Image (cartoon, rainbow, N blue to C red; front, side):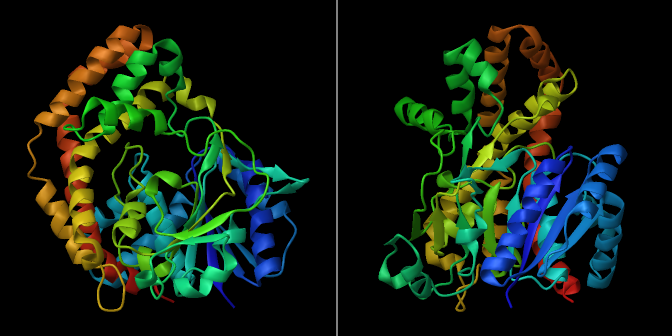
Amino acid sequence: MNRVCLTLPTNRACSATLTALHAEAAYAARHFGADVQLLVLDSADDRTRAEHARTLAALPAHQGVTVHHHDEAAQRDLLRRIIRKAGLPEPDRLLHLMLPPAVSYGACTNRAFLLATALGCDSVHRRDSDSTYQRHAGQPVFPVHHELPWLGRPAAEAAAAVTRTDLIPALADRPVSLAGASFIGELSVDLGEIRRLDEAVYHDVVGLWAPGDWPEDRRRALVEESFTGAGTAPFTGDHSTLTVVDPMRVDMCNIAFDRAVYERVPLPPATDTIGSDYFLLHLVHDAGLPGILHNRHIENFHTPERRTDTGFPAYQRRFVKFLLSMLYFHAVYDRMAAEGAGLLDERQRVRPERIVEFLRASTGLDRSENIWRLDRVDTAYRKLGGRYAAFADRLAADRARLLDEAEQDIASFADLIEAWPALIEAARP
């Protein structure tokens, strides 16, 4: 029986999402005979977490579905045991990288990867708490329908199960390493207000995540595509493609990875950085590992917390750190793309040591491009006025620290990759 981990990291109230997630787990068990380990990693406040516990306890038991609901204290205990067993140096720093006090999109998913290994799972299927499933013909549209059972199997075996194949024959023996789709609905990054206030400012700001040397026409095309997912058209019927999946076509709220990927390389543990959990999408693509791209898109929505007096500056800081991270990640992605199949060993598994090499090299990059990015954000936000101008004031006072953090995040990622094999081995049942 295929044991899989369907996981939801959350720090907000999402009882309706948990109920829907359990229904997807039951669907996977019923239709595919999967042994589903439903893993909820809960960083919400005490009252919200207690409500989540009541919601999960009230769900009907279903054969093939086991629910695990871990608050941060339980996660910390599990991590401490794994780190201690791994016998690695600087255990407190490793614990901090795995469970930082600040928001980290990569770290919460890394915890899911590690605990999935501890549970003996063959794959991880991630969803987000600020999204929901579409419905078609009165039934929920579950992405797991396309995620099982092909992960980890040779791409040639999956060819008969998809609508079309866009894969060169030389890749047919490589394992299906990813299955995913995108989202419909609101922008994945909550910048819609900027676009409504000033379209030109929106283009200026969003274009800053492109490489600094891109021409304006290419930057503008990226802006038009950025954060829009699959648009707004609802699901009307299944379509799937066996391909090397373009990272721009999938979203981390709707993704599944084979264990041979996440047990080799984790995600960047950067804090307060939007997009820090997308690295493996690029790695799978650049290594030429096959995937299944489908159209069971999840419906995205924004929670109001991001627009409160405390949530707004925190969210904008995460966006700025995303922009600064791209100086380093673009350099790494370029080297990964050039390396291609060299990213894989003789068993078609990704080679962590090559990624570490690229990351370490990137930390020596000149920061002038990031100084330019901060200047452009400052100018843009002051044009918008109001709370955007107030955030620009905070940003001006925080420039040096942000520049340092963006570089240090990359070094920390390289450190975590080097520690990862021992952590995975220590987590095994």
